[in-house]
Length: 160
Image (cartoon, rainbow, N blue to C red; front, side, top):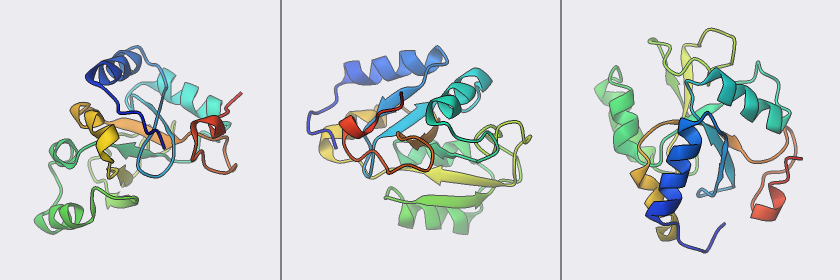
């Protein structure tokens, strides 16, 4: 992963990219990721096209900190919230009940949403801590072609 510390300017660049329906490449705790606005059909289509990923495959929603994730899912029951606090942040994706069908494009673009939502909150090392200031959700996927090895190094994130 990136050893260079991210700055508030990097986070501002991420905000601008996402606001323009762009797809961002970013380091996380496990591999490099791609992210976009989970409510933008154009951005989600672009992310899926970059990866060569079938539009029917769901993706996860990522927050860089737990508090905004908990605010975005007010229907979670106390036991679910306690489980999220115990497990996240961390290097895993939790599959949650999604009765409100939040983030439908992450649950399978064109599928109208699913009652299951993948949630990711990475455990960021100190050099990536600035990302915690980005409180919006991202539809996220690893930065590699679909079904290819994960991008553990920036050079591995070749999506041409």
